[in-house]
Length: 196
Ligand code: GDP
Image (cartoon, rainbow, N blue to C red):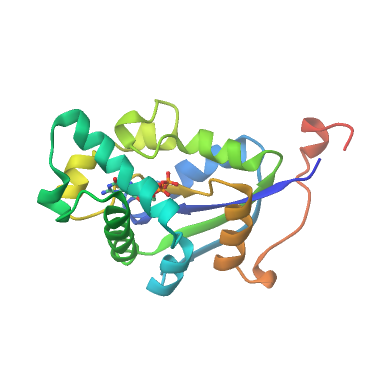
């Protein structure tokens, strides 16, 4: 069975709140191997390349707002000037690029089995108030879509975690050079996977 790579970013709100160590510990404890690690200012072009630039992703992000607004009887046009999911997604992407300029971020590449499912499980739901306790977002954030949109900013949900095998590979290679990535075995692999 092949291992998978995933990218984690402790976003500006996580860094500003001094949560880097606390959060990273959770991913180390579960047994994932850290293969890349750096603290850096994210330049806008890298953030733009990091988040997808296609209608499927824009639509998914915009639909999150529309679903939430429908439940509450709110009108997307008031904030976004449109109720088109793709247009809303494009606006959120612009907000993300600005948000990443607030402070440095901690960028970590991890590797392991079924890594994508594990990092998403530990990170929790994108919408902080829906993220269950025990997850990073559930434990450390309680931002809401209404408030974030009203303030023209992305949800402050502490962490980014790759959400597909393809994105994991793409994102790790976007943020790290080959020389910044390491290949080695954790000593406790022999205990976790005795027949490896
Ligand atoms: P993720 O993989 O869980 O981070 O979720 P996405 O890739 O769908 O969205 C990227 C980021 O955009 C999220 O982590 C949020 O910070 C932000 N975001 C997503 N949807 C919304 C939204 O409807 N409104 C606002 N304000 N921000 C959003």
